Length: 210
Image 1 (cartoon, one colour):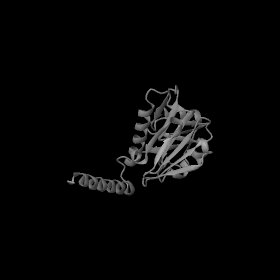
Image 2: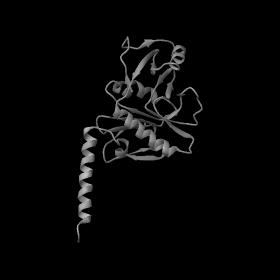
Image 3: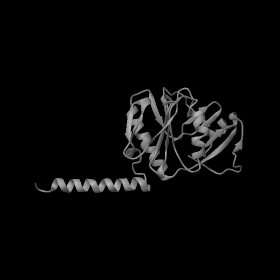
Image 4: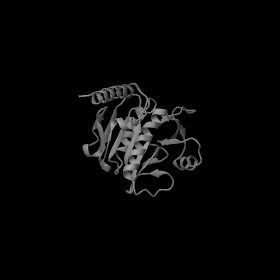
């Protein structure tokens, strides 16, 4: 999610207890990092589409299983910091306050305002969570996904159009095209147009008398 400019760019200094109390009644969500609360701004349409696509596929796959997929209202707790990942998969979740300290998968959709934090501060903290198996970073302006897995010592692997990505911890494979369904950017639009032309040619050839 994108960070909204605050009175102080470094965020508002408050205690963890104050943050937890105020956040439960706040209309604006805040991430809590190193003793400071940072206001969250609204996401772009593409951001919402990607998030909805991923959550929809995960929820369908996990139906009837002990693991669940949550959207960005679920906070991930890392020691004394609190983040709002775009998508979280947690298993046997019982916390009623919208907080998990044991995510298995975390997905972040990158934006210009959050890219540095998603790739540095959050990365370091997330991969130190004992339960986390996969950290997924999705671009919205181009078609590119990075996956960091505990199994491979968090070495990043990149995926683009034509590839499929496997969420190994839940045994789910998705074509990249599905993750970018309805997303509006130059790369995916050109891919759809090319695919449409090829399908049209194939249809015409199959309709021609032999």
